[in-house]
Amino acid sequence: MEYFVEQALNYTECLNKIRMKYGERVTILYHKNIRIGGIFGLFAKDGVEITGFTANNYAKNLNVATPASSILSASEPKKPLDFNEEKKRLVEMGSAVKKEDPTLMKVLEEMKSINEKLNHNGGVSARAEQASHSTLVRLREALALNDFSQSYIQNIIERCKKEISLESLNDYDAAQDKALEWIGETILIYKEAKIYKRPRIMVLVGPTGVGKTTTIAKLAAIYGIGTSVKPPVSVRMITIDAFRIGAKAQIEAYGNIMELPVSYVEDYDELKRTIAQYSDDVDLILVDTIGKSPRDSVKLGEMKQLLDACGPHAEVHLAVAATTKSSDIKEILRQFEPFNYRSVIITKLDETIRIGNVISAISEKGKLVSYITDGQKVPSDIQTASVVRFLINLEGFHVKRSKIEERFPCNVAEQIQWKNRL
Image 1 (cartoon, rainbow, N blue to C red):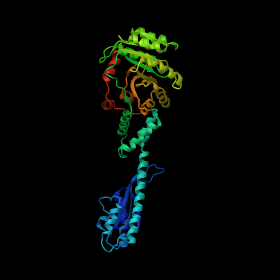
Image 2: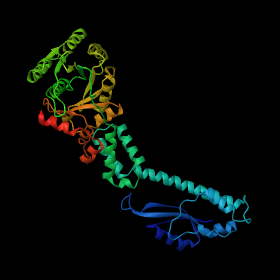
Image 3: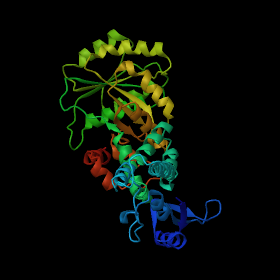
């Protein structure tokens, strides 16, 4: 039995080459697409490689006629052999071949070994080709450009490998559309309840310098003035951040402009008493807090005890700046867990062009996002969070906004009204 491996630019040319060398009676074991020629991987051409053996020797060794179905067909390439079926077929050819014929068994074992090796190498080659595909390289670079974490990037790339065929990867636009959709699926949006126990209490916590006081003022204006779909409600502001330089003057100025009362408290009893005073005639109480380092667990514990005065129905929301790196965001999310915050408010989105850090951290921790702020103007530079708002901020991606809005619908009309009215 004589094995051969031949290469050519296409299947027909390779077939003719084999027939010229070995005659008509040959059997194909395996064929695959390859790259031929080139220098250091450049200028190579597409080609075909065929592996098989000469059928004349095969038939001679078996002392039987080579079956017509095993002869090479000029019109259609054969698939790799199913050796269990081949063995069964050959054994049943006649009494001339005994079941334990050593020649037959040797042929089949050799064929099986070659086929397994070729299939394995072919599978490894296909996986290697997919992993180095230019589309995956571009996607990885685009994700890295946006500061996505390495674990997040790897998850997206692995999903591409599993769900997008090697042929489909040739269409980069389609592949990046799928990647955008998968990124959108990881962004969880907080939905406000339609009915609240009156008064509704919203508490904003977070590290120092993330813009909590400004965000409180924006929320106070939005709810106090109302929108096209939300009627105005009575609002009061409470702050426990009266000792930071300028903090009292800042929130006092906001309160005067919006004609909203502002109260200052220092301890648990005073906070509880102030909330009780507002309970009868106020719809919404917004509580501003002192900025705390997420590493100062003692101070965080003290503030948690003070905020317990707000009662079990109070909604705690965590403010995080978009400029914070991914690893630090994860640490902030973890350290503020004792506050049982319901959502994350992303602030200072206007101060960065890369938001993969934010998306990576909140998605990997499974946190909901309620609001996004993107400037210092009160109250216009705030909007309810949406998947669309995150995705259109990604660098290096061609975002088809209408398609994204269809896939991830949000109340765009309400957001526009906030911008226009305020």
